Every structure is written in structure tokens, then in C-alpha cells.
Image (cartoon, rainbow, N blue to C red; front, side, top):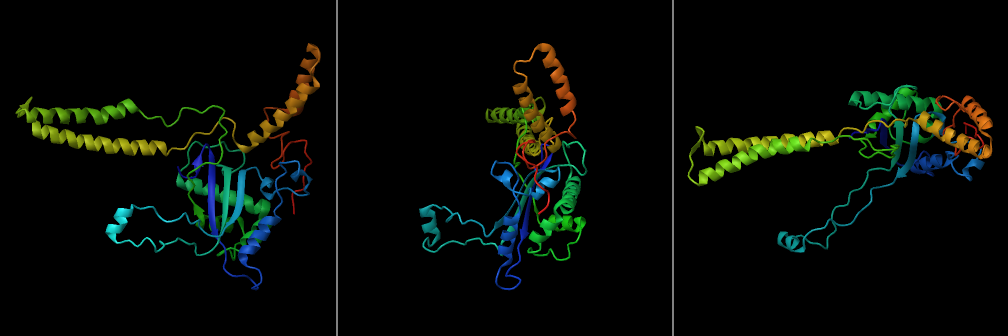
Length: 337
């Protein structure tokens, strides 16, 4: 699996931070931390609803999840385990510490879960080739530049190689150099898990098992002195059957690995506009139920008709919940800084 799963791209970027500092007093690494701390949070809790501004990632309808943080260095997990007897035979001095991997600089880690679309309104794809995924990443970078370019510049100006980046296209090219393949998705919107990537086990077992049985039978016959069977030399038959068994096994393993690497298909309703519409409809319908607990059938039918007209459950474009807020009834924050 490479980034794509369930119709989404799960992105990871490792961006090297400049060493030192612009004036020697505050390092570039610290300036990145300061800019990240200045980013307003999403309004997803009662406490954060009191803040004046909204998270900049909520300014577009691509982000299901986004996170930035500074990675100072890799974690040392301790010495590599080894057998004491083997180490003694090899002359390994266990008192001397082993090599410890270190990063050459601190990194800004940027992870995001986005709809794998190049433009608004496109359906979520079941599969995308490497070039198509690259186009989606570039389109996402362009969207970030257009919706939160000021914050992007403030953060990334402290990163190595960002000099001269002055457009969404240039920012996309910059991120491409820092892109790391992601092999684990961050979310699961499935209401029920579909059948996917199933293996034809009976066929695979037969493809490997039949020549293996033939090889074993031919060897047994050879052991008991049977030289020919149906005009074929039993030893030659055993060797050919063993070769076919090995070939079938290798093909079956490669088929199983390729099958497991296929992305899961998109769920029915897991693009971001639909998710936001579902949250909005859920809240509106809960209020409708509370307001019509004791309504007579005629009044209930009329009220439900009015509910459908006002809230348009089938229209994901609106009315709907805005990104980055806990509910549609929550105070709507300002978009800028």
C-alpha cells in the first residue's frame, strides 16, 4: 500500500529544519515551534470554541486530519538483543555500546489524511497510479498555498531549501522532495467492512499441491524400483514436478503479496463534504426529534416535510457543518489570524 487507501491519501512529509538561527539567539527549530504554537486550534471542544480564530487547515474541504510537529531526533530503543554465547564466540565486547543512529538535523513532520481528488467535486477513486497520486499531492499543495499561504511561509521559511518558494506549484515541488511513503491509514469510515482482496485459496492450494503430490508419488515409485510410468522416467517426472511446485509457490506468494497491497475501495459516504453533511444532519434531526416528541401524525408529517426542505439531507453542498467546528450551532470563528 502506498499512501492511497479507502479513496484517501495518507500523507507524510519529513522536512529538514535549518541548523542554527537567523540571529544566533533563537534557533530555526525554535522558530518552527513558535509558529506551530501560534496556529489556532480547531473548534472541536467547548474550551476551544472560545478562541477567536479557526484552525487554518479548516479553510479547505480536503483535510480529514492534519498534524505538524518537530522531530528532534530518532528514539534510541536500546542495544540490539543477541545471544550471549554467540557474542562470546564472535568476540563481541558487550560493554562497548553499539552504534546509535542520529538525525543530521531536526525535522518538521507533516502528516495529513485527505480526499484523493485533484479538484472539488470529484468522486473518491478506488485506485490511482503513482503519477495520478503525485498530481493529487500537487493539487493539495496548491490548495494549502491558496488557503493558508501566510502560515505556510511563516513555518516553512525556517526549513532547509524553502528559499524562493513563491507559488503553490513551487510549494508542491518542494513537498515532493520531502515526501515519505505512508503504509498505515489514519481512519476508518466503514459502516460495514466490504469483502476485499480475497484470495482464491482453493486455486492456489491446487496450483502448488498437485505438482507436489505428483513429485512425491514419482519419488516413492522410484524408491520402490519403478523406473517408468506411462512411458515417463519417474526420476525425471519427479524433478519436473518439483520445479513446477517451486514455480507455482513463488507465483502464488507474489500474487498474495500484490493482492494484499491493493488499496481498500472507498466507503459509500466518506468524502469530507459528505462526512460534514452527515454530522450536520445528525444534529438537525436530533433537534427535530426533541421538538416533535408529542406531535400529532398530521403535524409530524408537515414538520418532517419542512425539515427536508430546510436541511436538504441529500445535498452535500449545503446547508452543512463547516470544517473544524464541533457542531453547526457552535460559534463560527473567523478564518484569518
